[in-house]
Amino acid sequence: MMADWIALVEGFMVSIGLLVAIGPQNAYLLRQGLKHQHVGAIATVCFISDMALIIMGVLGVGRFVAESPTLAAWLGWGGVAFLLWFAFRNIRSAMHPDVMTDARMADAAGDAAGKGVGIAILHALAFTWLNPWVYVDTMVLVGGVSTKYDGDLARISFCIGASVASGVWFYGLGYGAKKAAPLFKKQITWRVLDSVIAVIMLGVAFLLLRHQLGW
Figure 1 (spheres, rainbow, N blue to C red):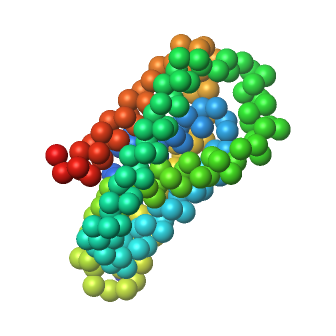
Figure 2 (cartoon, rainbow, N blue to C red):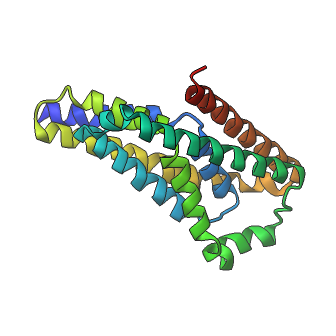
């Protein structure tokens, strides 16, 4: 029984440690949270996707994906293209920031909440599944740690702990960002955020491109 609780806690700590890094997925969720746009849908997509990756990792699927050159190549080039597109989109937004007045904040959280949710979900899916490193970070590493537990109950506990961490992180980041919304009534704040996100996207795209080209 004690081993199961240890597995649950370790699963939580391993997962939260991998999630805290500000990557493209987190940056996108943060921006949408600040704008009050489709936060629940995006956080749910991120959470369900991460939970699926965790479960596949514990089941040992991660090694198959990581060791498939063809699949890794397709995911890699798709990720580079998407990250570059989104980075330039943020650069354009930084040059022409939206004026987020109280009225627009309310509109974004209210009647406009259903508009464009499909696109937001597609973006969240792309940030998650077009990043080959997510398979290494989540599936291979989390799955690798879970192999230390022999019993099925202990592995299930580990998986539950990792999934709880994922839910806490994504929903906390998305909805917690709303508290910082008053700081983003000024255009300069949006310029800074969009610029930082663009740098993150370009940086990850460059590292992914280097990996794809074998530099």
